[in-house]
Image (cartoon, rainbow, N blue to C red; front, top):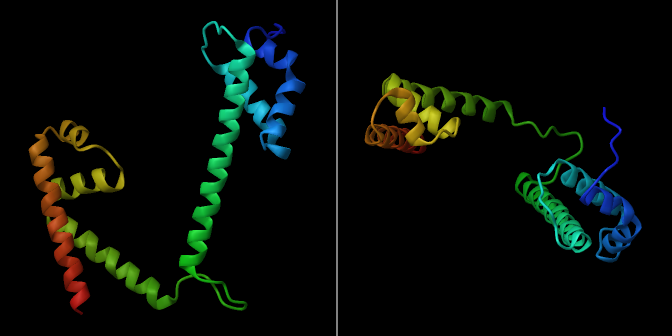
Length: 174
C-alpha cells in the first residue's frame, strides 16, 4: 500500500478534525460524531471530486448531510420495527412466534395452487410472471430476453394476473 500523505479534501478533514467533530456534536450527532466523520473521510477518499472552492464549508455541509441521512435511516428502521411489532402482536412467554402448523399447511397448499395456476398458463406466461414479479425484471428486458414483443409480455402478465385473481376468489369462496 502506498504511504502517500492525504491530499485535497482528506487533508482538510485531518487538519480540521476537531472542528468538524465539535460541529457534528453541536448539531446532534452525539456519540455517532466519530462514525459520521469516518464515513465522511471514506466518502471523500473514494470520490472523484474536482477542485472545491471552499473545502471546509463543503465538508461541514457534507458532514451535516451524512448525519441527517443516518438519523433518517435510524428513524425509518425504528418505525418499521414498531409497525412490525404492532402488526405481529405482542410475544407471549412459553409460546412460539412461528406460525401454527395449520397456517403453515394452508400457506404451502396456497403456494402449490399458485404454482399450478401459473404452470397451467404455459411456460412463457409463467416465466414472464416470475421474471417480472419475483425477480423484478422490467417488462422491456423480459421481452428482449425471450425474443417477444413488449405487448406480448404485457398480455401474458394480464393473463397471469387474471388467473391468479380467479384462483384467489375460488379460495375465498371455500
